[in-house]
Length: 103
Image (cartoon, rainbow, N blue to C red; front, side, top):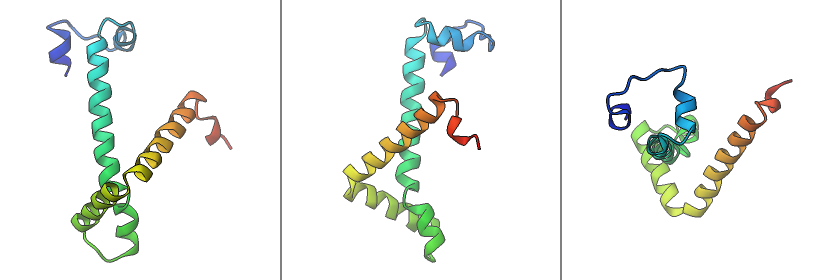
């Protein structure tokens, strides 16, 4: 992805977050967000039911992932709400600098 957006410029890791947020590389930021969201959606779809199913029942991983995919297809609204809650609460945790984890 860097090769597509930096066009031969040398990447300096110390300044990279500042350059990314400055708006100079908004296409790169959009690409990162889209790829990340796609991967997160794939992992969520394949893992939302499969992890508990593997622990609870004697099934193989492929069957568990296909069951999870079918569950997301049938219960789309509930799965979107569940994913939104995960994203929102994780964002809230980051915004408060993980204050909820301090004992």
